[in-house]
Length: 228
Image 1 (cartoon, rainbow, N blue to C red):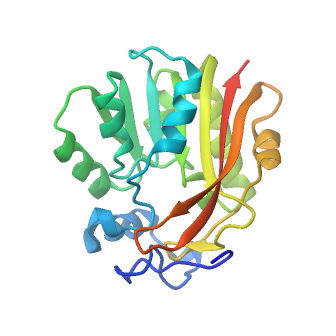
Image 2 (image 1 turned 45 degrees about the horizontal axis):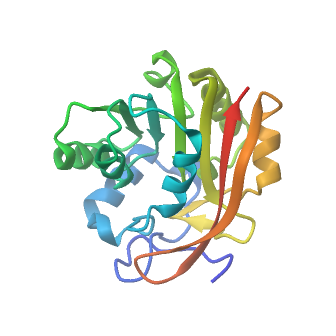
């Protein structure tokens, strides 16, 4: 299954549709439609096993009042799990207002702040207070242009506190080249180290095979960094 794309319109098989050119896509509409046209548990990025992320979060040693930002949260069950563990200062951000509305309706809690914003053209996120932990699973790899990546990492670096943490989980070099109809930029641990620069120290990393709802395999690289 390595290097394949996935099809978002095929609810029984995967998460992606035929590749479209980024410049021709209204990304807000694209992601809104993804959540409107499929049930959450059929989306190719839907997780039931959060073990890899929870494993890395546990290594941070953060208190339950730590300020945690989940970018590209969609309607992730990770937020539910963090609430179950007692974390009480969470931010869920996504480009899709539909995804965040689904998440907000499901959680019905004041312990989570919901922010609709664009990571490569931020308006709200650039004004938030810094966070103790930045979590990104399967968002960064959609930014294929150097300018987009630079904007993303500039925002990240400005919004993570000193001694704060960054958790990045992206398609690794054996991963799919297209997802959700969009091209992706695959990463290795070394590439992420280079992108974050010397102000961030790698704490842990590992490769992980994510099993999609369809049963297909998607290879990821998981990394945890601490800001010096």
